[in-house]
Amino acid sequence: MMRTRFQQQMEELREKLLRMGGLAELAVDRATQAYTERDLTRCQLVLENESLINAAEREIDELAFDILATQQPAATDLRFILAVTKINADLERVGDQAVNIAERVMDLIELPAVDLPVDIARMATAVSAMVRRALESFVEGKAELAQAVLEMDHVVDRMRDEAFIVLVRKMNEEPQVTQQALDALLVARNLERVADHATNISEDVIFWVLGADVRHHAQAASAAPRPERREQ
Amino acid sequence: MGVGITVEHLNAFYGKTQALFDINIIVAANHATALIGPSGCGKSTFIRCLNRMHETIPEASVEGKVHIGDLSVYNGTSATQLRRRVGMVFQKPNPFPTMSIYDNVAAGLKLNGFRNRKQLDEVVHKSLHSSALWDEVKDSLHKKSGASLSGGQQQRLCIARALAVQPEVLLMDEPCSALDPISTGKIEELIFQLKEQYTIVIVTHNMQQAARVAEFTGFFLLGKMIEFDKTEKIFTNPSDKRTEDYVTGRFG
Image (cartoon, rainbow over all chains, first blue to last red):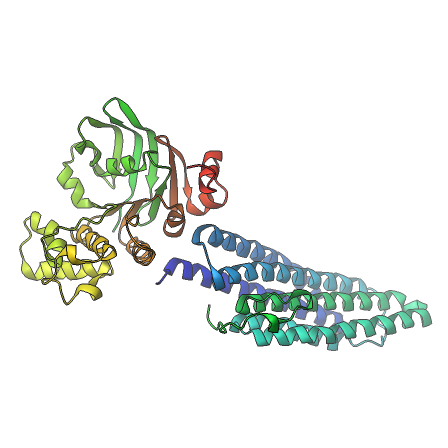
């Protein structure tokens, strides 16, 4: 049985979330490039972008709210809408983390450039890949793609831990670069948080596709197998 | 194309008993508008005032103004003239039982003196297509009677019959209440498709149905229009406490 209006609304919701995902991904990429290149213009772009992300968040919530109120979605459709609202909140937080990084960079640019024993660019690449893959798993409706993102989170956690160790040591050894080292440490923490949001997004995709709650390290495999959903 | 409906200070009576109190509403053209409310709230009376069905009941009367597009319903327009522009579908499917499927659809046109066979064929074909029934009956148009169809098919036949006279407005009085969920889904999908060409007003007991099919919803209670707004507003954040109580199932 066709439900044209409902299908149109669901497609609109999906498209809006993808646009939102694109904005959040762009914000993180710009913010980390701003850090590695000490680029004020990119910082400003990130700040300007934030209002677009916030507006997108409101629009998505509004549409999801209307669909829930008027269309009585069930099963996979219901899980999809719940997942979208949660992913939406995570993407907005990703945008906030990008803003935090950009603000940190704006402070950093005022200070002399120093060599720090931490590879923020490498960490940023890993984090961006997580966000991108989490969004791909949503686009494709594939739980295995989402599962791969969950496994990447440990790698980013380790990078953050290593960054903390070397940067604290650097601050002890060379107190004159404490400010720069502290900024780098905070950027590493912001990036690790972005990775956490990517992880949350992936968990929501798994919930939508398989109906399984894998949060807090529960196993997807414990859920009853369900047919893979590829189209929304 | 559909036309808008304007209702001003409408009061309706059954003898001395007042059933509707000062109803004011503007129904948007080419949209579906749903009327909800508990039994006896006046929603069916209201819809029957739009095509002068109300006055067919002995001692029933109406005050106020109703315009269907530029046509003044209660000022110089004959009921026949009006009903050519305003089709109606009822709760219980009511095909003419002895007529074939074809004749059921063509009945309104024939009644208006329309005799050209080729044109009749075209209208019957188009109307059955519009009501999403064509594929199911195309091989038995003249062989089967309207009464031989299933309830859901009969209701779509009645919709085809209403569409055949090319109305601008389609009134639906609980069109799905006698139908199973699959047939209900088909009618709801049909409403979505039809509003491109017609203005639809649907009375329904099923408020989820109102939420699914209508862009605008009016809530009636004790003969009064308590609230009229966009459907999303009615079902997410209604302005009136009584509407909130009804849509959340706290009464009614």
